[in-house]
Length: 373
Image (cartoon, rainbow, N blue to C red; front, side):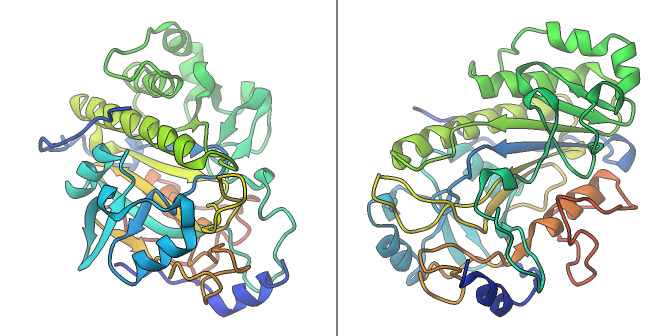
C-alpha cells in the first residue's frame, strides 16, 4: 500500500483525547485518449451528504485486521464471504457487496482508494465543529447549492462569479461560465431529457446533467459538484447504507461508460468527498455516530488505479489510530493534500489560501500520487 506522508499521529491523539441488482463491469474497458492537458480537464466531485461510513465501503480481508473489524463493528459488520475482493500489493481488501462495478473498475486500474483522509490541524486545537455537518469540505452557495472550494469564488453571488447552478442541484464552475451562459448553453443543459444510459434516479439525473454539459459546453476546464444524499446513518445503517452505495455504484458505472464513449475518460476525473467517516463502533439504534478520517474513491482514465493510497487505520478501538476510543480514526492524510492533488491535476498551479483548507500550502504535506500528471 502506498504511504502518504502526514503530520504526527501522536499529536493528533493528544489533541483529540479531550475532544437492488447493481451494474457490473466484467468486460474489459479501455479508456480512449482525449489528450488530458490542463486546458481541457474536468473534475466531478461526488459529495456523499451526511458522512459516508467508509468502514463498510472497503474492509481489510486479511487477519487480524478483519477480525478486529468484525469484533468492533458488532451487528454492523459485513460477513467476509459477502465482500468483493480486491488487492493492493499483497494485502486483500473487500468492497461492499453492492459495489461490483467499482470492484471491476478498481481491477481495471481505473479506480483508486485513498485511505483515512480527513481534516487536520497541525499543532493547533481541534475545532469544536469537527464532528458537525457544518464542517463540510465543500463551499456553500446560494439556494442550497455546493461548490468546490479551490475553484469556486468565495462570494455566494453565483450569478456573476463564474458559477452556473444547473438543474437537479448540480453546480458547474468554469473560467468561461459567463460565456456558456451567454451562448445559451445553460438553457440547453436545463432542457435536456434524462439520458437513457443513466439510472432513472435523482443521482442518475444529476450525472446525466453533467454529461449533457460536457457534450454541450465548450470543453475547457470545468468543475462540477454532484450531491448524493442518504449517508447520515444514525439508524438502520446496514439497509440504508447498502441502498446508498448501490446508487453510487450504478451511477458511477454508467457515467464512466458514457465518458469513455465520448472519448473523454482521460480528461475527466471523478472523486468522492464527504463531511467525515463514521465511528467503527455501533450505536444503540442500529447505526453509527460521526467519526473523522475515512476513505475516498478516485475514478477516471488518468487515475493510477488498482491501489490503495495512504495508510489504512488499524481498526483497533482504543489503539494508536483511534481519537476517542470508539473507532474514530485520526486522519493519516490531510484533506488539504487530497484537494491540492486534485487542483494540481486540474491545472491550478498557483494555489491561493482557501479558508476551508487552513493548511493548504503546508510544505510538509506533498501532493499525492494517485493521478497521472
